[in-house]
Image (cartoon, rainbow, N blue to C red; front, side, top):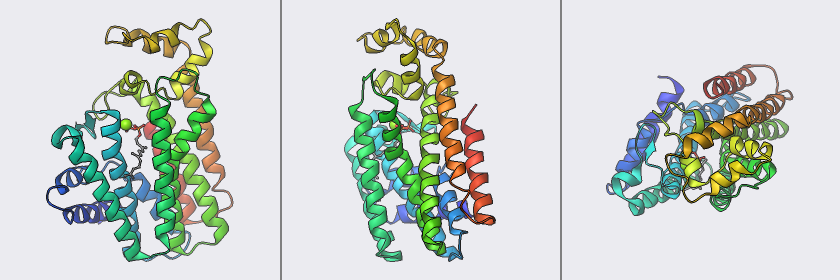
Length: 309
Ligand code: FPP
Ligand code: MG
């Protein structure tokens, strides 16, 4: 069985261990795993040394479980109705039950981590605290048309980069990598996470609408890189006016979308993502040539090709 399939199997098994009233939301998400990108990064970093394969699977399930917990909460916070092409958990079971399922997942992360290695619990806790702060920054910037790009990238680094970084650190530590390699892997993961988040924010304007609905962030006032880049170019203030107008209803959305494209918002956001992606790749330089570096490069470029259009 492939590594990602073993991680998914472990994840589903863990989810089934939750209270039966909370398990179904988690099992449903676990059974529809996406690309398990975070676990793949972890496994690749494990190759910096000689990891125990079974522990690598369990650690992979831990980072994917954190991801699931954060998505359960994020969909409640964003009021998003679709996740991975299916109704979001809170749409099915209600906001309270979905939030508590996320909390139960996170508790499971704690027990699983402690079971593997008490020492890792602090690293995991720190990363999740970073994620939570990033999500708070995400909520608080709503409808801020003057949000500096530097604050946006800090938000992306916390909300998404911290979990990518954690995956790399857990893998590298498990493999027994040298400290300087663990640090380089952490920086690589963090920068790749920022690139991923910027591309994810582009998808709000260019998704095919199947896995991810269009214009959700736009309607919520969660202005990501493409919108912020377009706003900087629109000296007329028309775009900001439209974005803040209480009547940003269905009829205005196509016009806003058009303006973002005309003001080169998507183009510039992709360039910005490209710079973070290149920065991430540069962090691989100090790593020894071999399987880990090759796998990290392959995983990163797969992510880039899959997301950058
Ligand atoms: C998706 O972002 C959400 C995140 C990257 C992180 C969410 C983090 C939390 C809710 C805090 C951590 C909580 C726990 C329990 C671990 P997005 O809304 O930009 O992406 P989307 O379009 O896929 O929803
Ligand atoms: Mg969301």
